Length: 497
Image (cartoon, rainbow, N blue to C red; front, side, top):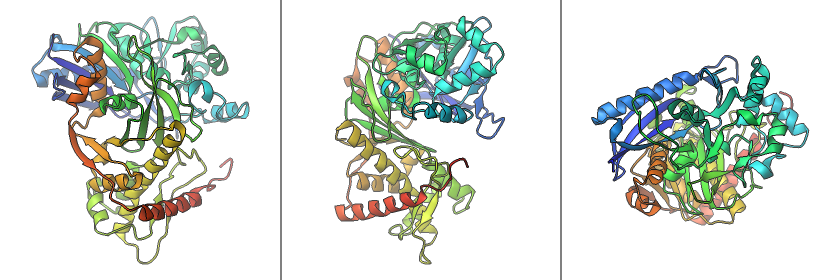
């Protein structure tokens, strides 16, 4: 048995490849950014060929740094940005257009049009998702309607659709496949059946012939046929947030993770049944291993967390680097009555209020820079609290704790405040790259590199745990004022603006 495994983490801004040994230790890594193409306001595109080229580059660089070659790898797993949509030519393998990124909002008019015909939640029972610009369904619809002959070519199978992992699998193995976690983000897959849904395809006017086969997330998907990883089995395809859930070893109902980044993504494992949210969350696949029942999760997406710190740095110039925010926040004992609601482009989960806008509330002449810094960190924790409460309400599960990762998880003041608000312990792992780690775990389980989940649990090293220390009266007072601030951020944008 070979002694190393690789994971490709293809994200929104860059691509990263890591190599792990059997103990889960990272031997080497390489990373490369790709361009963000914005031809119009609200339009965000990626060049699929640039992304694939970068994948080959980082694989080669990481292998070289580790002093290894492709024959030393037992398998490779792929984690990817999820809803980003690619359409390419079956015969030439060339993209018909740049990829439409999950951030792209060009289909907002289509969202409104379809919502008028049956409401924003008209497909939630089947897909777990509301109508939104976020998902792949309407992005694909737009490409089919706006590219010459694209719809006719899709109908006869000459134009192929996929999210990024599907595009990469096609180029690496020649197979047109997608895994269940990514398929669940297209809004075209029936959650319970893990299959493309004829009624959904009709509603979104998507031809079945252009769709990839839905395969398990963790399974042997064929050997890579060219490039620096030639001959290595491709053994996992998984969406990035689901990969982070696995990387945080959240394999049982009630286990949850939060990734603190520019925004934040919380996932709660709910077991073998999809829980349709009534509290503003998304229902999604957690994982589907070959030969096993699919596992589901609830997801809450927060638009602005780390981006608020960046705003204080770049727009207000309150700090010169993001790392300064913690020291500045510690210069005061509390928020001084100041609350920031960072609804720069509306509020995401669990509110879903596009009419909201950002506010700073509770200002007095007493407030100074430290209070604003502290309020910014606390805004992240308050938003996470709101999503966790929605998860508790929807699932009926009581969380034993919250596993945390992402750039803001380095901020210890934030994590202590988060533990205090939630009344739960927070655990930060020693291995920070949990998305790539989850892809490696999924690949390793599929090829027998690791024997099972229990062996993986033995690899997960804890860096630190924060336990709640705040009394209930103080917590409730803070939450009461946060809710008042959120209420004042709503109804800011008039309909049609």
